[in-house]
Length: 99
Image 1 (cartoon, rainbow, N blue to C red):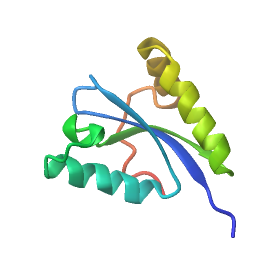
Image 2 (spheres, rainbow, N blue to C red; image 1 turned 120 degrees about the vertical axis):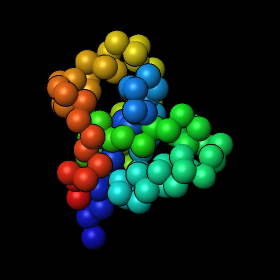
Image 3 (cartoon, rainbow, N blue to C red; image 1 turned 90 degrees about the vertical axis):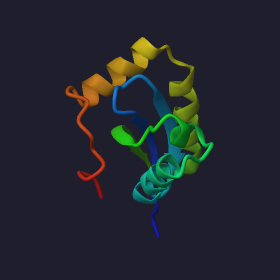
């Protein structure tokens, strides 16, 4: 069975905070972020209400996805914003448009 791995970026309502993560089940992960947010969980995404998917990439191996996540996390906010804007110019919420 071929499995996909995702690097994704979520943000809050005001786009002031970004969360960068990696998962093999992006819908389940987004649901976890929403649950954490609604239940005031102490996870980073929950604490800062980063529940809006604005960017993702797909990989065939977990190693590739993890390396990409680490790479993006090191970038400046400006570079992360450009990555999102090239993929999703209006910063539309993609939660219901995937998978």
